[in-house]
Each structure stands twice: as C-alpha cells, then as structure tokens.
Image (cartoon, rainbow, N blue to C red; front, top):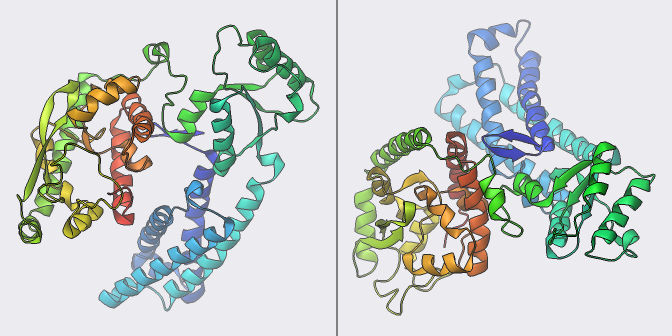
Length: 458
C-alpha cells in the first residue's frame, strides 16, 4: 500500500496510473513523429506540441479516473473495463473535435490527434489486458490467512475477495476445521499447522473478536520471526477501505494512536482554505442564484430558503441554510430521514439535489464559521442524541466543524438508518483521525466526480 494525502492506495493502482502516463503521451508522440515530416521537432517545440500532448495526457487520465477505471471495485467484470476504455476514448475524441472546431490552431501536424487516439486505443486495450493477466498470476498475488471466527473474520474474507486490487488471495480455512474454534489452543494449533505448510503463506491477518485469553501470542511471534507479515484486521480495513471499523474499536486504540491530532495551526489553515473556497464558489454561483430563487418560488408554495437546526463543532447548534427542495409541510409529522424517491421532494427539488445546487446557501454557513467546506455532514439534534446512545464514539465526529462535503459523502451513499449511520461514522472517524489539508483537497477533488456522476443524492 502507498500512502498519499493520508489515504492508502494499493500498489497495483499506483502502478496502473504511472504506467498509463507514458502510454498516453507516447501514443501522441508516435503519431507526431510519424506525420510531422522530416523534422518533427518543429511542431513539437515551436508549435507547443509537447505542451498540448502533456495537457491531453492529464485530461485522458482524468477521464479514466472519472469513468472509475482506477476503482476496480466499481467494475463488475473484465468486459466492463474495455467498455469504459471505449467511453474514455469517445469522450476524448469528442473534446478534441470540439477544440479543433473552436480553435483550428490547436492542432499541430496533419491528423496527429486522429492517429494518436487510434494508437492509444490499441495500446490501452493491450496494456489493460496484459496488466490484468499479470496481476492474476500466483507469483504476483499475496497469500493471506485470516485467523479468527465469526462475523468480523467472515466480512474481512468477503472484502478481500471482492477487492481484486488488493492483490491478496485468501487461503481456505477448511483444512483447519478439526481444531476447536474460539480458544487459544485452537488458534495456536492453526498457526502451528500453517507454519508447517509447504505452500507459500505471506501474511496472517488477526481477526479474533474476543482476544482476552484466546490470542496465541507466542505462535504469532514465532511466525513473525520466521518472516511472516502479521496484520490486525482493523488496521488492514482502515488502509484498504479508508474507514475505522466500529467492530473491535476500543478506547485504547483511539487514545494511543498517532491520529486525532487537531492543533490550532491545522484548524487555522483549514479555516482559511474553507473561507477562500467558499467565497470563490459563492461569487461564481452569484449570477445563477436569482434564477434558482425564482424557480423555487414558482415551483411550489413556501419559502425560498429552508432553515434547519443542525449540530456543529463541540455539539453547538446552528441554523443550516439550503434552497427548499421539499413541500412546505414535509415534516408536519416530525423529523424523519430523507429516503430514496422521497415523495416530499418537489420535481424541482429533485433536480437541485441531484446537481447539489440546493447546497449553495451553505457556503454562507462556511463564511460565518459555523461550517467548514470539508467535514462530517452536520446532523439534526433530534437524531444526534439517539445516535450517540446507540453508536459508540459518535460524539467524536463533533471534534471538527461539519462540512458541505466530507469523506463519508465521497466514499459512502446517503445514510437513512441506524446501520447506515454506523457505516458513515466509520468514514467520519477516519477523516477526523487523519485530518489534513491534503485529505481535504482530495475530498474536494472527488466531490467534483460525485456531482458529475450524480451519486449519493436523495
């Protein structure tokens, strides 16, 4: 795993990205050398050809990212990879055609872009096929054994089998089924048998739910000295999924961690960045605000703006502002979570929510200092008291200002139940633990993708 902006990425994903940079740039360079006559340095150096190729390379990688080609868990099968590559190439061709229509001088050489896209199509398809084949070879997959029984171990095994980009092959536990489950002696016997195997085993992941009196410490140390990698299940999930699993999370793991350091300097920098981004966003949206206000006024009876009490930093309440997207009597029977295809949402409201235009007034909350641009989404006080009783460590999300967007928003769907609130809290805790400007900028970048793809809105 490689850590960037306080987020862990699989080595395979990083290699995939770095491998496609020379492929994209090289395809257009080959086309330029092929079609630019006896001296290709003229269009490349004196007609800004190299700069244009660099811009096309960055744009192509962004398209690849936005079509989820760097997120294998969003792709159901190998055929879908090639289909999405064709979508990337189609979008690239469309943008190039629009650029050349708008500014014919953008081209350098005759048909360089046409031939470059054709070469890129072949190279990308071959590269992805070869890379997927290599990644599936046993020599390039890490063999892991999950030590433990119960729901935590089962969910971890399921996650590792779904996460093809993790490059881990989970060993079957059936061969150790004769040993007693849940006891130190049983786990010790498993590890002894594992150590005696002639097949390669690279890593042991400890997913024992009740460790007191059942952890085989001596056997784990023995394996560690023999060169095995030993991982804690929660630590592995934190790296792979970008969340802190609530199952097995104990106070000592929060007290003695390197994270959750929220100093005044870090808060000041985040405040300045949030203020600058929100002010810029508000100025950019200013020409459209009167039209949105008029549309809301004409779409249904009721106020233009919707004000609702939310819980902010340190549990202090504040009034959150949004454009109204529901009927005026939407909560006549009390506070309830929004659901999919909520009948209380107006037709215009559905569009505003899908496009996130209803969130524009919250930029004012950020300017006032009640919110940050990035942070855990603020919850209503009617729900906070209940959730704090039902979910351990829920109050930790109030260590920082709430945000318009957040880590849970870009990594998880909308939560409208106790179980979904638990899953969202796991991402919020990861964000608070690894709070940094780099992580905030990454979330802003991923938010653009979420908005463009219309994900997560209700």
